[in-house]
Length: 152
Image (cartoon, one colour):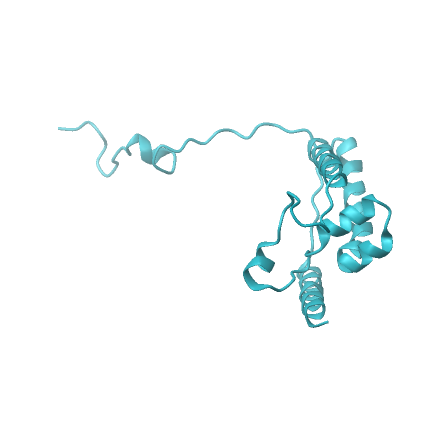
């Protein structure tokens, strides 16, 4: 006979951790400044790489838009790489032509980054929280931009 209490059956080891042999590791502590500094480093590295490539020319090793490859239509972010290249080279008019919506969003993205950096320097975590109306407005603007740029 078994010595296990009635009604209780010990689970096999592979079921204790929630899956077949999957281990759960504790989350490592991270300083609140790690995210903003990591984003800054990745942005600088990406900018340095993009500065030497011209996305207006064919044959460059740069990211592509899967939505455009599948449908032939431009998504809200299409032209963002060309826009960033033009901004890095000081051509604001060409950047506007490539993707005006993303260009107009840059001040808001910079403000978000500055707030996150300020909180990180103070040792606090900060996360952007948007209510349902803000998310709806943002998605609505993206849909309108997509429709407008594909019709014109």
